[in-house]
Length: 426
DNA sequence: TCTGGGGTCCTAGGACCC
DNA sequence: TCTGGGGTCCTAGGACCC
Image (cartoon, rainbow, N blue to C red; front, side, top):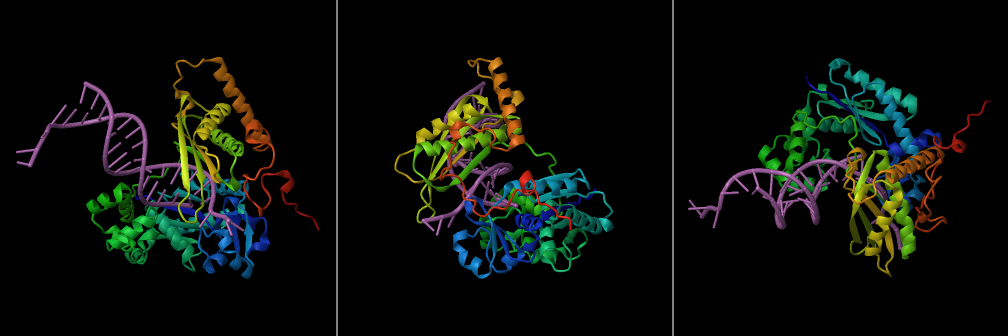
């Protein structure tokens, strides 16, 4: 049977989240900043129209922000994560065949639906999500995921299509692909786009019609899949269940540069705590710890990155052990006299809890059970009372300069009792 | 002064096995 | 000209995504 995919994508997601709880922001220019208030990572349409590109450093755009009175927000991931869940739950009402692709996107399988009702179904989904969550979405429909991504772009761009673009009943497919620069395709980034253009392939239609062996050789199988999907042959499947992560990373740039080992240790310990939580959430253990340390700035030469790897005696998800191993790594790479910008931890060599190989020489049995029980108690308390209800002394207790700058964060409208908006009766 | 924080997949090459 | 013919595992690096 001919497959049908829909890509549902939230419009300017972070900005839309802020607008749900602050309707005065409608039709006004709004941006949301990355962690540490570093770059602009979400823009309202009004800001896009001003020509401010995605990823612009905040400090470079202060003039424009003042001139056009752009409203600025620090990122509020608790809010965006919660709103994302609401959107996804609404989508699940329409089909269980759903892949949550990112915080603001999902692929749906609409295979088997009457082709003539696809557009109408998408319109219903769109208005239901808007009514249930306040978030506007656009929907692209096509026979493959690559084409659905593209259809979604047209849905956002074309006036008059009311947020839905159905490529399966579009008669001028080739003309549309010819008008699409090759770099706009899902899976073709800057490097590949530059290469393809140097080889005379400028648009999506030319890539579609290129020679398979040539594509395979120069763009690997990933490129070949893209070409096949452009021809309408589906080869990137819908992945309903998220597969367990093979590596878990937590890292953050510091609010202000850090010079002392003790402060680095505090920051690192709190990132390890967070990474270990993610590890336990997917019922895994890690057997390799990697610590990164970044010094220098982006001006002039690239920043220097130092790293150290440690293979653990036995896989574990026990936070105190992981903190200790990470600290050993940090001690190996730390050098006095540098201004460090960032520290990070990467947990890998991940195995599922059930298949873990025990170390022959570790004391097996009771203390492992106790460690596991302690961690699940800790996790459930922190889930209930907030992520820092219980934390390790190693993570530090005073406010320190390494913590993130978030000068313009909105409230936790949906995740903290005291921040829930009040509706006043007249 | 000031530039995010996560992830995935693929390939090539080397060490080592029988 | 031509040097056996398979494998596996690991690492490093490069590309991509949001």
